[in-house]
Amino acid sequence: MSFDKEGSELLFTNLSLRAGRKSTIITTNLSFERWGEIFKDPVMTAAMIDRLTHKAYIVNMNGNSFRLKETREWMQKQ
Image 1 (cartoon, rainbow, N blue to C red):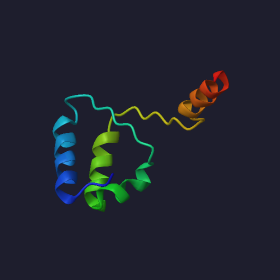
Image 2: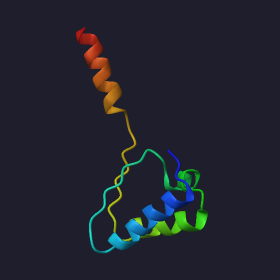
Image 3: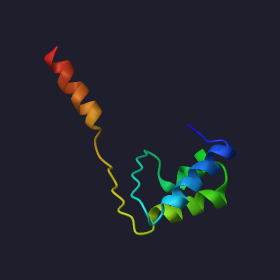
């Protein structure tokens, strides 16, 4: 899903207000390098990533798909 300018600005504002005050969990299958495809504004995207990654725990979950594994197991039971 891509964001229009207003949607991107609202998300950025929300994240900026929460930064350093509240925890935020974001999951995505896109690397930060590809976030520009979603948010369209490279300056705002860089600022958003900066705020999200400051004092953050980043968990990279590369590996086999759990859904694919579960589907294969389910299919074997059928």
